[in-house]
Image: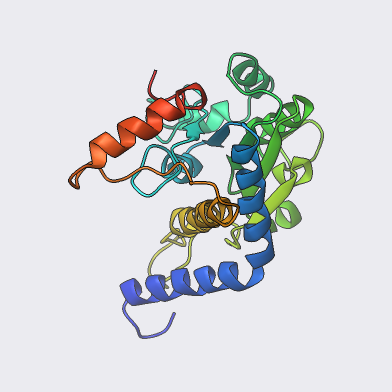
Amino acid sequence: MSDRAPAGQFLDAAIDLLRRVRDEEADSITAAGTLLADTVENGGRLFAFGAGHSSLAAQDLVYRAGGLALMNLLAVPGVVGVDVMPAPLGSALERVDGLASAVLDSSPLRAGDALLIISLSGRNALPVEMAMKARALGVRVIGVTSVAYAAETTSRHSSGTYLKDHCDLVLDSKIAVGDAELTLDNVPAPFAPASTVVTSALLQAVMATTAATLADRGLEPPLLRSGNVDGGHDWNSRVMERYRDRIFYRH
């Protein structure tokens, strides 16, 4: 590490990753935003899923100011963030064969919908199986992952494949294996993960593309306003009433 303070080094590392995503994933971001716009225009529903800390980026898309009202969280009990106790149970559940199929079978997902699956490593059974099963149902799947893991780790799914192998589109977060940007001689492990920052920004870039694409087609994007500005609640109520058959977090 250089002589700069760790805080500055981490922020520089995150900025460098964001620049890489901006420059190297531009076409994929446009394609993903277009796919979601097509889904909205054609009457489909939008869902996002992530396990563990990857769920944070999924949750960041749902019911938020400036976001698409149609984005729903596909929740898997025990793996959404670190809400389960003990926390390592969530990691264990990601490796359970059959869990994704059970979740999808009881979910509202149907042909014509779109599903964002966020998994940094993309190696565990849950995201791989979810992508495979969703596509078999006729759902369009966008995978958000670090492609580096497929080259440097082994798959934990029985097929030997990764999330990236079962998607209509893949967005590469560029995060290095291990998800830690800093090292110090007197610290025994690398530290300062950047995956949440980068993945959230990447997905918001996709959402921005979706909204702008819909507007370019003459369609009003179903966006939510902040409830903390005057008129925000009334605006959101109208949007959610208009799209009530495609919003599942309000029922």
